[in-house]
Length: 157
Ligand code: SF4
Image 1 (tube, rainbow, N blue to C red):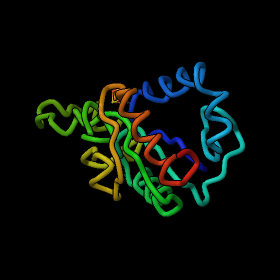
Image 2: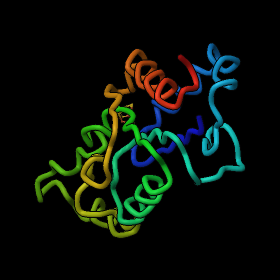
Image 3: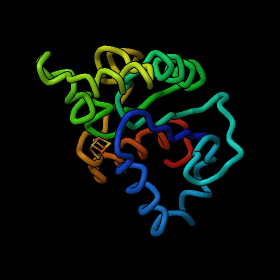
């Protein structure tokens, strides 16, 4: 099963958790999974025909929106990883700022980095097939979802 792992606006704690899980599971997973686009593990990555894309983080710019749509177009299934991807928060905290809070410095950051007015959860931008909530992601639920797709693609019984 070809997988991708992607990060958008977030602290990447679920990515760290995923790499930590490899300490225990790499030998088993390398027989079941092809890490086709996993930047945290390798530099040569291909965004094509992924069976499952795991996407962490919220969407905070038009560029990110384009990128995540491209991932969606190249993936059969897409799983939102962690609270920022599933609900927007805590990455979307700035959506709650009152106008007085948005001082000149924050405004400048938003312009310099071309941020969009609102930070959005993945489901506001693309179709999401499954969610693994938690901050960082809940490991039991991650295993459950991974196993669901391994069965669906007949990699395991
Ligand atoms: S959900 Fe929590 S752990 Fe995951 S990226 Fe967001 S802030 Fe970090």
